[in-house]
Structure formats: structure tokens, C-alpha cells
Amino acid sequence: MDSFVQNRGRAALTAFAVAWLALGGLALAGQADKAAGTGYAGEKTCLTCHEAQTKGYHGGVHGRMFNPKTPIATNGCESCHGAGKAHADAGGDKTKIASFKTMKPSEQSAACTSCHNRGAHALWTGSQHMQRNVSCTSCHSIHDAKGEKQLKAKSETELCATCHRAQTNKQLRFNHMPVREGKLQCGSCHNVHGSANVKLLAKGVTVNESCTSCHTEKRGPMLWEHPPVAENCTTCHDAHGTNNDRMLVAKLPFLCQRCHVTSRHPPTIYEGFTEKNSTNANKIFGRSCMSCHQMVHGSNAPSGKAFLR
Image (cartoon, rainbow, N blue to C red; front, side):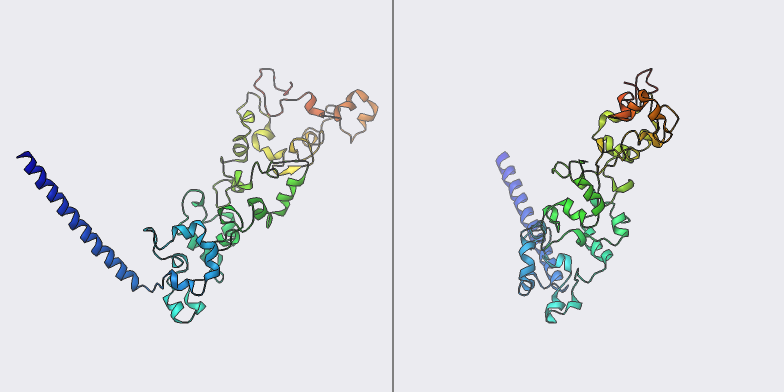
């Protein structure tokens, strides 16, 4: 009796599965018929004229994703360029197909962000690059990429240098971010696709939070805080590179004397005092103020008000 019930159960499940597959096949057939009437020409038709463009496309991520054989997308080239049947029937009339070369920057980006709208790309709308008419295709190439992430240049630094020449040139200075050695890249600190932070910073809300994501030993709060340090690291440091020690924006003691310009201590070279008193004059050489005030980033010592060692 039990075996009879089990056999009937299996038969019922089999019949249900067959019916489900049949309905699914009818649905897919209906979708295919519907797609056929939307004006799509198919990737094979595109290849008859645009074979050169597909060489880079087929080997990339988009080619694998938009392959007509995959269940995710069935329109191939037309996934980005739109239905192309009218374009093909008109003998390649450029006005009847979406061409990224003739689109406005905002239209180009709108096409890309129809898929790339999450994660690092979520804040593209309203970002600094978008507001300056930089589009996705300004940096990326689907058909002729030279570097990773379909970049138009061999590396991220080379690509950023096409616009941000002043910042990338600082990498050639004596002290610099380790971008030149390949240990970091622009994207290590900046999210070029948009950020809620200043300077398109990828980490933290402020410059200091971005810096202390690596330089954790400088993270506060401290018992005794140095105001310019607590406010902004770039008050004293140039994050891209300088010819001064520790990427300082000016040499010591001149950096400190931008704020601490009192007479005799620290000695200033403007009043001639250093020429008359050699004991104080030696404080402007070597590490200068830092020879004594070593805890300039802040101190947790009870007697650390003057940031002494």
C-alpha cells in the first residue's frame, strides 16, 4: 500500500513538472515573439559591418555578460546601443541607432548607470566629475580598452594624469605617496565615481578620517591636541608629494612659524635675533622645532601640553 501511494505521488509530481515546463516554454516563446517585434536586429547582423568594434568587446566583461547565449541579456550589442533593425534596414543610417560618439556626456553616463548604479557607482549622479561634463566614456572604453577595468590608459595614474597633471607631477618629487612605486593608486584614496565626502575621498567623512584609515597611530582624540592637526592633515602635509621631509608643505622651522611667530622662542630669521644669539640659532637647523616638540600630532601624557618628547 505504501509503495502504491509513493508511486502515485511520484507520478503526480512528474505530471506537475511537465506542465510547469510547458507553461514556461510557452512564456519564453511569447517573450521571444514580443522581442522579435521590438526592432532588434541581433548581434550577427551587427557583426556584418562592425567586426572591428567587437574584437575588444567580445574579450571583455561586457561581451561575456551581454552574450546572446546567456539568460541574463539577449540583445548583445543592442543592450547598450538600442534596437538596431531600423539602422540595419536603412543601410547603416547613423541617425537610427544610439551612438556614444554623438551623445551628450549626460546621455552616455545615463546609459552606463542603467546597470552600474550600485556600490562605488551609486553616487555618480551629482558628483564633481558629472558636473564637469565628464562621462563614463571619457575614462572607459568598451571596444578598445588599454588597462584594467576597461580604462583608456594602461594604468589608473596615467588616466588621471590626463586632467590632473599638477597632482600627478608631485609624485616625481623626493617625498611622495607610494603611487609611483605601484603600492597605491589614485583610487586608494579617491572614489572617482562619486562620494559624499570632500575631494571625492573614498574613506571617512573628512580628510583626517581618510588619512588615519592608514596612519592609525595619528588618530585621536588626544589628551593634548594640536589644533591644525585636529582640523586638517593637509594644513601641514601635501598628500600627493613634496620635496620636504615627511611631505610637509614647507621646510622647518618655516612651517611652524606660520602660526608660531613670537620673538626669541622659537627664533625667527626676520628680526636678526638668530645672528646675535647662536644658542637659539641652532634651533632652526636639522629637525628644528621637532627636535624638542616631537609629539606634534598630539600627546596623551599628562605633562604633554607643549608636545615635548
